[in-house]
Length: 154
Ligand code: CA
Image (tube, helix red, strand yellow):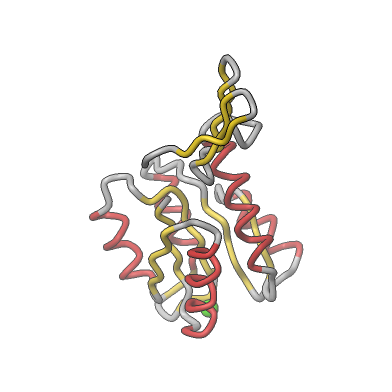
C-alpha cells in the first residue's frame, strides 16, 4: 500500500519512511505542499492514505486537506503536528482529517493507526476477511485455510 508522507523535517521524514516500510507500507515522502499537490494530481488513486504534517514551509497542511475534501478526495488523512493542542485537533478533524497524532509519536502507533484507517476506509471493522475456512489478512498478505498457513501473491 502506497502512503504519501508530507513532512518537511528531513530526519523525521526519513524515520517515517523507514518505519512505514518496516510496517509493510510503501511510503513516498515529500517536503512541501507544492510537491504534495503535484503528486496527488498525478496519482491515479494508488496512494491509499496520506500522512500530513501541519507546519510546512509553503503553508499549512490543513489547506491541502481542505482542498482534497473539496475535490471529493476521501482518502484517509492522518495529521501530524507539534502543536499538540486540543484546538488544533478539533480544527483538523473538522476539516476532514481521519486521525491526528501529536509529535513526538511512536512509529508503531502511527502504523497501527494507518492500518485502522485503511480498514475503516474499506468498510472492514476486522483486519481480515473470512470465507468458508479461508482467512485472508490483507494488511500482511498472509492467511490460513482451516489452520494451514497460506501465502498470497500480490
Ligand atoms: Ca513541519
